Image (cartoon, rainbow, N blue to C red; front, top):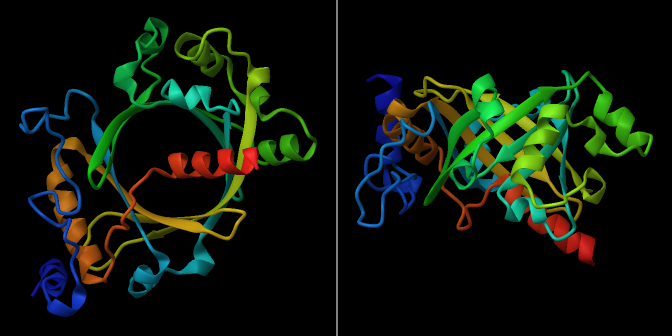
Length: 273
């Protein structure tokens, strides 16, 4: 029996507890629908989809993640104390990588709630994809710039504003789509959050699967699995990934929220304390 079929067979065995969310062709995920319940086409919004699912570390042990080979990074978010950017559908993220150049991203999420500036459309610099989680999906556009290695750590350790690392096009995007009269000086830093990223390829799954563990200062953590695929392959990949995860006893946590949402929620509460 092929490895793929063995994985799906194991997923159906009583001892492997497949999730009750595992219904339909999308498995843990559900296709986007309009108000009348008709399935919407995604191809017009983006070329690829990132399938994400939050689970618990306890459930992922059988995946045999090699923790010694994890990539580490620190993630910072910039916003006002009352999350004015987030409320306007904007996310500013800066990452400090341990083994490669750092990066800064300004993200429009959802992209449909914004009028993308013409200069940005002409340059075709916005990376657009569907972020899909069980029960929800959103189309987002990211404007990303590479920074030098160690730039974020040097800036942070010297006490200089991380907002100064944003490139001019990113600042223009914030000015065009953000709150009126917002200044970079209005932004505060949330984080850093310590992140460990593992890459694995379970038997029977022909795509790379990423597992990210985000650890917060209070000792809590969140584990997210994700994989990317073309829009047209999303139902097939979602169903196969559901079978693979179920076969290893991995099911979605009750709360499915993006890492950004959970980080900002934690950080705002900590900021106000």
